[in-house]
Image (tube, rainbow, N blue to C red; front, top):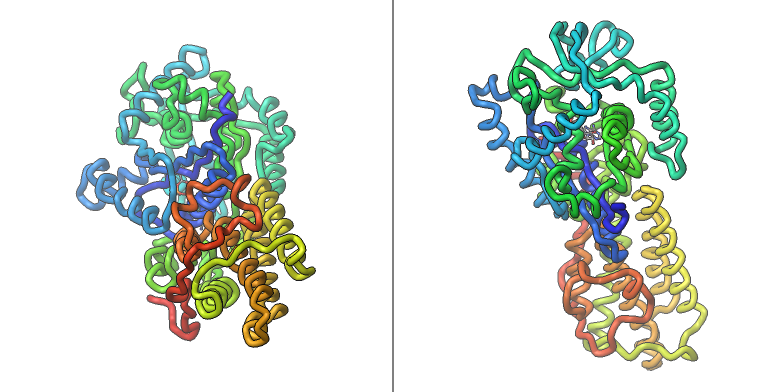
Length: 519
Ligand code: ME8
């Protein structure tokens, strides 16, 4: 069931503000994986969206004198605008205020109720509006939420409860599953350790405000925002409305989340699915937290820098590349303008961009911009065997790294091939061949290099789609890389003889590293 489609998701983000670098990080990495899987020939369903209910959004709207929906309608386009600017290729975008979500959530909640998986009780305790989460004293540092620095509010209400505690053993079993349900392993250990300490039943409704989806059998309650938000992963793929779609897309292959929301995705979400005997997601991957200059990122802390501020200087390709390459996915990381500029210049402008410029310029100069005929086996030397071998091993390493959800390793592997291609230019010295008049050897070398650029365009498209498509066209290829398939196309020796090449402007012009970051 559901294994024909590769289904991946990002969190649905709270729209109490515009997106920051952290949100874009998750979404960019997910997009890289989605594009890679598509080129592997998989049918992909990539979902992102917005989480629009709850106290945090209600208060944000109120502070602006707006109704919650008026506020979310204003701000959601700012999120979509960023995903467009970053070339995010999501197949769907779900807003939790959409009817398709609200209706399916009610179906889900009614089903829980009908199965006796809901009871009425009283909740007395603490609530952090920033987290939209209930807290126990052990969660706090000096009485404050460690994530938001605020003192949680005291809440006492009649609430409906979900009997989370009874799922303890089944959850622990789930964490032992192979391949692992929770990744990376440190996160698995963290969540398993916490669950072993015991689980409290979960309050799943609120009565003190009404910005949410009503409990279907008791409309004086709205559903706790996290409970309905998690359901977006199934309401968007036909749960309760389109059984055929649901059967073919669900379960998710991977939910990408930050480590801040590990608990919700690896405890509450699977337990709710278990309660309805629905298939469980294959994996939840919780990546680390980004900081800016060592400080936690949030608008309120003024270290918030908009992703859109970086695009005029770096462009979307370099933005995507930097975050996927610089930070080991799963570990905490640090953003700085300086490291972004340095990586742009070294990897994109120098290694990759220069290679493309040099090869296309030589093809123009020595071959009048026409791809020569492919070398025969007896025309290949050890140098060609070496570069082809490097491509094959780099590509294999990339495939494995993507399977392991290690985008930084995938890109590191790609650059082994980029560097090898540069070394091949140095070793074969096409300019000397041109002088010596060995025209067939020159053709063999330039064919090999043009074909290497073609291979690079293919394997880098998932992370730098604009430059890759541009390079593809400059190599005289028609069509778009998006319709290529690795199994067919990511093989050496396939650039077509007779293709007309174009030199064009540098794909990644060097930037001045001394130019200061925008304030
Ligand atoms: O939690 N570094 O929404 P949210 C890296 N609506 N990633 C970061 C980050 C940082 N500093 N800050 C945020 C919610 N993120 C809920 C989710 S899902 C059913 C509901 C990313 O707007 C990371 O993916 O607070 C994190 O988990 C998510 O944004 C939290 O987004």
